[in-house]
Each structure stands twice: as structure tokens, then as C-alpha cells.
Image (cartoon, rainbow, N blue to C red; front, side, top):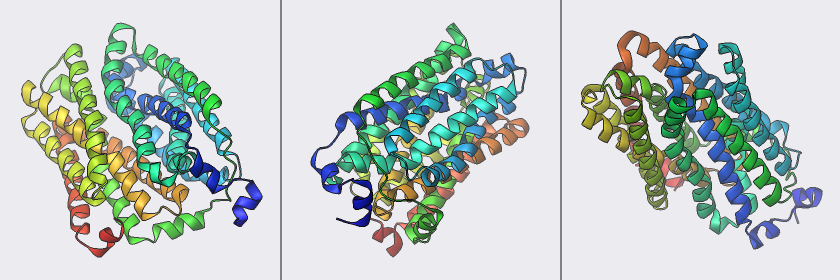
Length: 402
């Protein structure tokens, strides 16, 4: 028995004997609530900006706030709570989803909105930083792909539901009620996690040194830079998808809801496609996802005035993006399976920096070049990421990562 097992009372054999599938499902439910809350502003920016008396660009920074705080919170929570039982840490993060959603629902101005989104960033950042390590505590290593597929299924479901349901609820009951719904989802997730998750004592303190060690691995650096480019491009476009659909192909609320639903359904199937390809070649899966995002963004930018083109391109865009997160998780798992929390924190930070950068650049571009200009930037950034990982996949570095 190693030192960590002696001090914590946790035996790796125990975790590898009886998979806790109910706990894995509770993680999926939690991430469903978190990602739903994260994505809601994309379909509600117009009514939110009108109600709060701010510009669409300013309201879009609610996405930036969540991303920036999440980027900082992920590593901070991994390090700061490393001696605590992970079960209680996760319950605290889920409680932040509830609190954030309620404050957002009752926001009276932009400062209150941004504060609530900062709380969401803490919950989201902490969860994503620990998700890979939590899954490894709940199932044997041979069942990790299945466990991650279930957890990522929560992301796919949120992608399907968040934007179209948010747009529909916002039109029928008001945008505030959409966030009341995410608070209810948070309560359900909290209760499920409290019932199903076993005790998960600390297995030893994580620190910035272990993150620095992981970051020195060439495969990790290539993967993180790819994430930065592709995700920044994606969220530059996705943050302003509703203004684009309103002003370029000129869809009404019902049309926008339908297209966003198609985007989500595409993402749901893209998740499975990404998992299937990742089992064979993680770098190839990331490359194909990035190329798909780039091509569909360019199509929307240059031919999106056609309602048919906009609908088809948005659906395929959802499929391409749906394949990206599971591809990234598989890549990171292979490159740093010995340090899952540190690798997860680095991946989370990169994702959130990319999301915030995309939202910021998108906000700047939408004011000067309109929504179509945002998608041109999105396509260029994603294509650069696809080029990077595509060339790297031919090198010994990517080959060593799987």
C-alpha cells in the first residue's frame, strides 16, 4: 500500500472492484445543469440586454465573466481543496450553480448579473478541473471511456436543450424564468449526488508543481494550444448566434429556437462520433472536429443570409463542436493519465481562457463588422487550430499521446 493510501484510507482496489454508476450519472446530471446555465445567455442576449438596459456586447460579457473566473477557479479549487473529501467539494460546487442561477434570475443590473456569472464560473471551473479524476475514483480504468461518455452525455444534452429551450422559455415566460429552471436542475443534481456519491478522501495534495510538470509534456502543450484556438473561434460565434440569426437570415424567435435545437441535436450525435473516432486516434478526432467548426463558420459568414444554408450549416456546426470535448478528454487522458487532476485543471483553464477570449473578440468584432464578421474570425481561428493538431498528429509527439 502506498503512502497516499495509508494516510487517506482509500484503496485503489476498492475503486476498481465496484463501479459506482449511480455516482457517474449524478456527475452527468450536475454537468447538465452547469453547462445549461453557461449556454443560456447565447439564446437570451437580446431580451437580457433590453431588460437590463445595456448593449448586446455588454450582456455578452456575462459569458466572458463565467469563463474568466472558471479559468482561475479550476486550478485554485484543485489545489485549495486537495486535502478535502472530494464528495463534499463537489456538493459545494453544485450548490454554487443553484445560488448563481437564483441571483441571475433576480438581477437588476449588469454588476449583479456579472457577479452571479462569476459564481457560476467557480462551480463550473471546479467541476471540470476535477471531472476526470472523479470518474477515475468511481470506475475501474477499463471502464473510463464509458464513464466519460456518460458524463459528456450531460454536456450533449445541455447543448441540445439549453439554447432552444432557453429561447422558447424566454419568449413565453421571460428570460429570468429560464435561470429559475437551472436552479431547479441544480437542486435535483445536489440531492442525487448527496445520495449516490461515496466518500472520496484525499489521495494527497495537488500543487502548482505537478501542473508545471504536466505542462512540460509536449503533447499536452500541443493539445492546449489547439483547444485555445478552436474553442476561442467557436465561442466567438456561438456567443452571438442569436443576433446573427436575427439580423442575417432574419429568423423570428420560433425559427431561432428550431435552429438552436438542430445545433444541439447535431452536438448530441457529434459527441458519439467523437468518442468513436477517439478510440482509434485522438489527434485525428480533434482535427476533424476543428475542421468542421472552421468550415461551417466560414459558410455562415459568407452564405448565411440564406435561411436554408444557415440552418444546415448551424446543424453541422453543432455536430462538429459536439465531437470536440470528448476528443479533448481522450487526448488528455492518454497524455497525462498519471496526473488527472492537474491535467484536468490545465485543460479547464485553457478552455475558459479560450471562451472568454472568443466572447471578448466577438464583442469587439460584432460592433465593427457585424455578426457575419464574427463568424469569419471564428472560422479562421478554428482552422489555425486544425492545422496545428493536424500537423502534430504526424509527429512523434502526437503519436506518443495515442
